[in-house]
Image 1 (cartoon, rainbow, N blue to C red):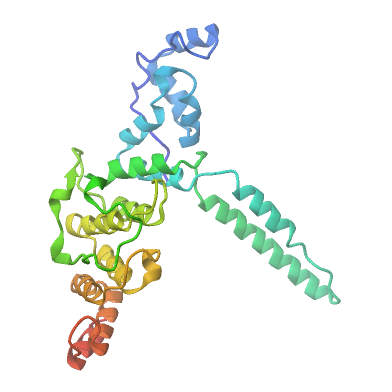
Image 2 (cartoon, one colour):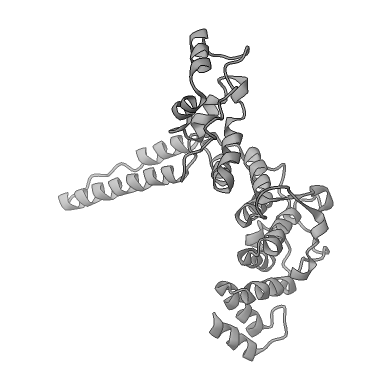
Length: 306
């Protein structure tokens, strides 16, 4: 976890404006302070939530959060995206308080049992506090659509949704996607300083599959983001995820019909890339003749590799 950063001279020529909400005395201070000192005072210990508050002070600072993400590079933009995706929505605290209040220790006949129960309660409360910290919203409100925008920018590619099926789920008569079927013309490489990002593409697939930060779930888009991760970012895990989506309905949010031949091909692609769980799944496919001609020899071979 890193603190958001901005260039040392970021506040140069970004003094108070006519529409500023600060007082004349504060405005004079901003104009007279060296930009390096202003930068040090305002941002050295600031988190994403602090920058979001500063961005509301005056119009010339409105892009503070975005500029900090751009300045910090891939890691900073990923952190910001995750904070917006899992940020505080006002519900967690109330839920935690209800849970904690409902778990008061009950009286027992044995004093030792009572002490043990109190210790267990204390451990539970500590775990809950740690879990709350792990949500890692960094002071930001949840904003899933904005998180998707940052993830799209970070992913390094832009996919045109109009080229894909608009229905939430995929119909049974629609052809499945195989490793050899990747259509590069359906995406646009963004002009960024780094290559397509695996983690962002996988996260975007999850968002589109479950309708997080987007108007509605779209299984076709979710599949294509995983395809892009496999072909452009060499993501073996994405091949495994695609195989699971075609093999087990629960892995596709029940939006993708089972297609054992596509599942086999994606398990094979991941297994040949060294993905151990896919090796075991591929061995099972050969053992049962699922999506491929049954072969005990090939099955044993892949089980041994796994």
